[in-house]
Length: 500
Picture 1 (cartoon, rainbow, N blue to C red):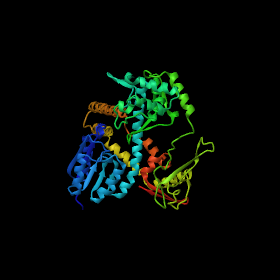
Picture 2 (picture 1 turned 30 degrees about the vertical axis):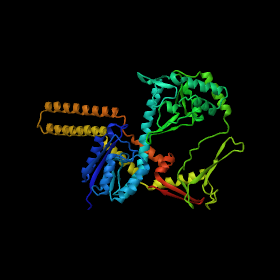
Picture 3 (picture 1 turned 90 degrees about the vertical axis):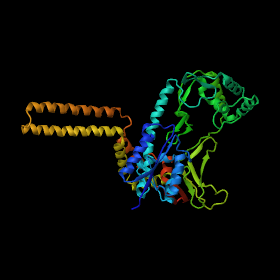
Picture 4 (picture 1 turned 45 degrees about the horizontal axis):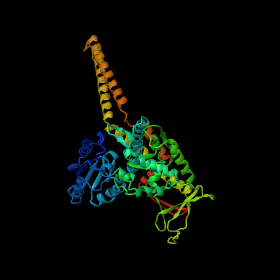
């Protein structure tokens, strides 16, 4: 039997100092796992205060050197995100670096162990689903908290719009930055005078006025004004004292913030701060802008983005969407894909396949694939693991065990009374004390359950799993987790390479 020399890797970034991810918590989980399974820990590697996106970290670099020289041949982490938050890097570590150096990799809380290939394959997909469940829950709480603060007129975003600044004694209150507020007013006046965004930008540059990114000393700031910066200011209702909620959406797993272009989902909270621009002037600008708008321009987020390849030349497939005869609408019903090299006559694959048809084919194959996996069984294992390791569940189990002991004590008391080892009065006294003890522990259980806002909702999680199996929640991010690539040879020959 191979002798394993384990290294445990612990990491905590500055922005994630929550208790369950602390260095101490990670150390306890990984060390207990190693002891329980009889693995000898040779060395501990700790990167405290380093982001998981960084490729180079002191302890990580040291561990990789130790692996290459054979000092350790097993790496244990609490979860993969401790090692890296980059999906491409995850694949490089688990599929290339560790196998090439004959190193076994274990992620304790995700049930991943490269010593058992079926186990790791079976869990990768479940990890994506579990992450979806927890990140969705966390993001809802964060958004609800931010929404409540915004409704009170508190500003909670990192960056303020150009023209405003935070009050020195209240980080949630904003005031007009009079040093540049006149620039905002000038931009609106010039636009009403029918100056274009480009002309306004040229004017501001000629006056050597710092643009927003340079003035606010942002990272990678640009030096000059341009039409896009001008139009952003002209479109922002923040300048009439309104706060827009849902304008930006943050993925709390990737930390990526994207603009929400669906304006019908925006929520406008009026009069949250002092305006720079009068509402009448702002409305006039919007009327002018609306009159200048030409044909519809919509970014369509299609389901199979970045997954499709030509089966013949292996290049990415090109997404094609056509306009109506009046050029005012996109005809998404007839949108589809063909090889990106077709029109350059560098590929013989002339297949054009409709987006709708291909989506249905892929969804059907994904659902079939999910049916092959014991998804329900693995879900139960995840739930059981969280139950076993959740501190509140540990307390509840401890109290339940105490109740069982007291119940056994009550049975013994009754037997002693029947056999006349104790008097009836002694029995009543002891029995009454036991009942009070049981009530005490039942109250403690109830108190823990009421205060445990983070407990796992088994029913909800299992419903999510079932919905995934039926294809309800299939989206681009989920497909990228379980599909490596989709190759289109013809309408009748489509090959899907799965990651599981």
